[in-house]
Image 1: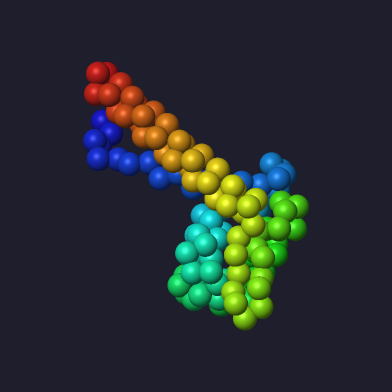
Image 2: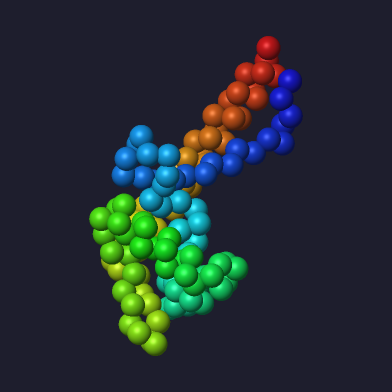
Length: 118
């Protein structure tokens, strides 16, 4: 019998090529973009995650290349802002992730209930 306290964790990655093992947008990049949204700075967002600015910049540029959209608008020393496309991508990612978590939790609960009846 399965333990009743199991909780599913869903790691969502979005990619443009389903055969590609890499991801264009996943939890790390979502957190980085949210950090930029909150701080107005890629550097501050990277530091908040314990990440080097150069790595953060590579992640943003790689995602932009794969997605074919600009995620970040740099304003020199004033910092950075997210594009409308990046904001929409974050919102869509969060909604999809939350939906998948709810579906996974419901499916697990059904499986546990079914296991208890057997």
